[in-house]
Image (cartoon, rainbow, N blue to C red):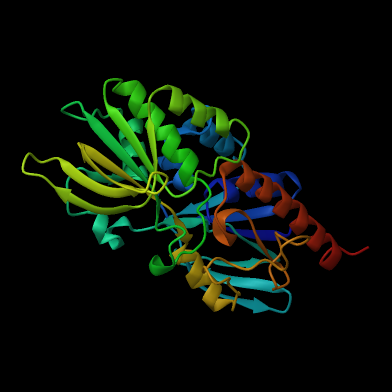
Length: 338
């Protein structure tokens, strides 16, 4: 009889882990609260650094779970431990008894409206990185063609006042990728990036940054202090260039806020029921930060992806594969008779 594994979350981490666990011979029950699988990946157009279509990656992940039982629009209503197994009651009325649980609940996007000084939800032409990516995906043009567009890094990240002191890890690269895409679509437009520090740490990320510089994108080191709407319906952005110690005032047709990652609210609700520990930033705590990254402090419960902190997509997929191996080892040590 196959051991049941419950996977909570149908984003990239949950899909990749489920596929690997199914190939190892387990019976997988995957639940996803949204209508479709794929998490944030399903909402994205192209991925940094080389512009790979997000749908291609998602299609590949979905092709690998053809034998996995998936429930969409489904939440955990209640979950508790029975001896060494987990008893979960799902919102669709189904009860699952699982020998191990993988938390792949991912992250939520920081609500940019909380940073009132940037004007999101107040001014029509202030949008988020996710909004812009949706425009790319739906091939929506900006009308009329913009003369100037700005990108604000670290919105809701590295910000103790916003309750999220951690770096979201992907915002810099996403901002540079999107700035390059905008510049390609509107080559005559002035494009600005307002940043704290550029954290372009991955392979080919620096190449993307150099491409942006060569295309004429202007990088201004400094936080935006104020955004206001002008009489002609443009945006006046005030900032300080901390490298030159001079104030900056620019008029823009659109401002894009790079909203960072914060802990998943849905994942947090499950964590409360199981008394899972979290770090100061609200993300789940691994058993230890070196040798047991995919293990929780609760036997039989494992982590993969951004539920333990901000991750790039490659890191997320690597963690999902590692989690599958850890779960396989745990099942063999605790449930399979020798």
